[in-house]
Image 1 (cartoon, rainbow, N blue to C red):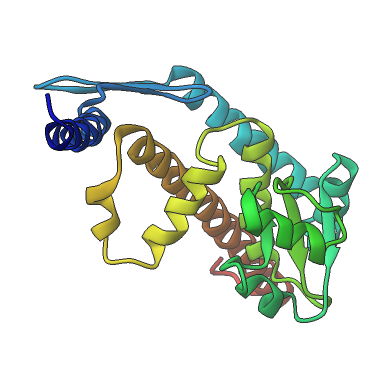
Image 2: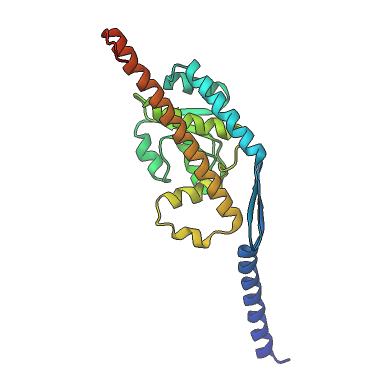
Length: 232
């Protein structure tokens, strides 16, 4: 074999490895996280998630109890969060500071790489390429229902519900700001992680909406009683 043929075979071998890796990415038939497993075949997709479902119900109950005990007061909830070892940072212009890494005020899930280095730096959490979960907010009044939404997600993270790992959250944020085109490039693990991240956000939203409906409804009933209304 002459030198030219060796070069051709070298590049063909590289191309084959690349194609095989790409094919394996899309042909993977199972994905596992901390509490669930998804298995796919030619005719069915099955998710084994009894432990996840059990933990979701536990999260809902515990969050409901804690929020009620704190009178749905954002500052009391933040104090509870700090008591469990999660850092809470109040920064001037927090929204602008967080926008640099495309994050929003409230719960910042664990980050990696330059994003982690940035958030660690601005919150004085050391210099590391990995960050822990934390709350970052502006000084001032916090909407109680937004706080309830963020608190639910924080508690779900503490309970190790899936969907909060760095890659799942990164893909979730891209998905929220895209037309869905990202889905065609995801492998099974990434798709499963995105699904879990979406589920956690939906659960937090549902919790906050039910809380708002309950509290605002109770306020209306109380006002009618105080006003002497008979038709409650």
